[in-house]
Length: 392
Ligand code: TTP
Ligand code: MG
Image 1 (cartoon, rainbow, N blue to C red):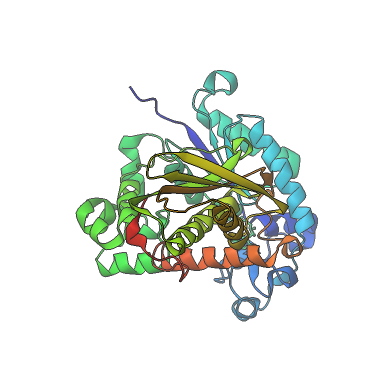
Image 2 (cartoon, helix red, strand yellow; image 1 turned 90 degrees about the vertical axis):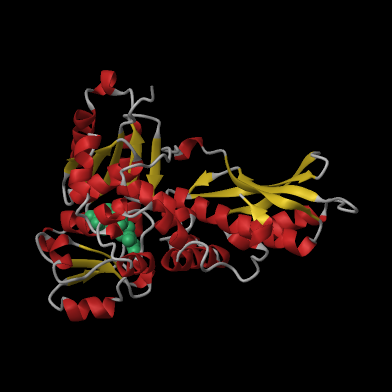
């Protein structure tokens, strides 16, 4: 019998804004907008008081000022937020090593089996929230669920300062079916609009639509979305601290000797790895290329870079150089893989600290944002071709 997992998701409330409100009593209970120089004129976040005016993260500051002219506007003070972020992380690790940190203010904890040590899951979540408040004077929201999707949905539902449980599978569907479909992971503006054009407005609508219809329209992602609408999500909590390397590999449907296809594949793999590294908040310094030939002989080649990176083109350039160093004469390739190791944790801040970011990394971020907005697979680098030759 499979054990039901116990996952807790914790996310700080209006993180940057709450810190500023804590440190400046005059900002308390007032619309406060944090953004500015470092973030090139966009809102980083807004206090819940400011959100009532329609102000949200990512919005141009000029627009925020029109919506909320009487709000207080303060610049980003990353150093300060980083310090608070570290304290929160340390608290997570007091409960379990199975912590997956996302960005600067949230994390998943797999506390399956921790009950004997710390009390039941609800008790653990309360303790985490309590410790965070005690150490930082900041409120957070926690969600409990049998998987990552439901845990994150739960923490979102209770914001701010909430503690929401979506553990009992019989009651879960009742609680989530009326929520807009945008609450499903991976459903952004474009997918949301397409779903609505199919008459699917809520999670319940999606759950009741035959999976074949969703798959026909959205492919693999459709199947995953449909499962989530049923409260199913099999992704594991992947502890950041344990990741030694991040890699991807691809087996071709037919063996390949065309260098341009191999190079394009490396670019595709580099894109996926770069995105994964960015999400995990880490950079790496060693790039390894793995090749399996048609006779199943497998080799690997590695190189150390001058600096740590999560940039697509750094990874691509290095893996391509490694490929060129291999004698491919009359050989065909069956499998190609790239991995990046010697990882260092940037604690998810590399995307926020402009000064620590190389141009390649900025490009990685831009591609990442665009891909998310337009949907995975729809928009990809022009040089990623021959997708039909590729089998994951
Ligand atoms: P979030 O957790 O997405 O937002 P939040 O903590 O401000 O508010 P919520 O209560 O809804 O969780 O992001 C955490 C911090 O990351 C946020 O305070 C500021 C920063 N951030 C940006 O700088 N730009 C962005 O586009 C987003 C979404 C967040
Ligand atoms: Mg938050």
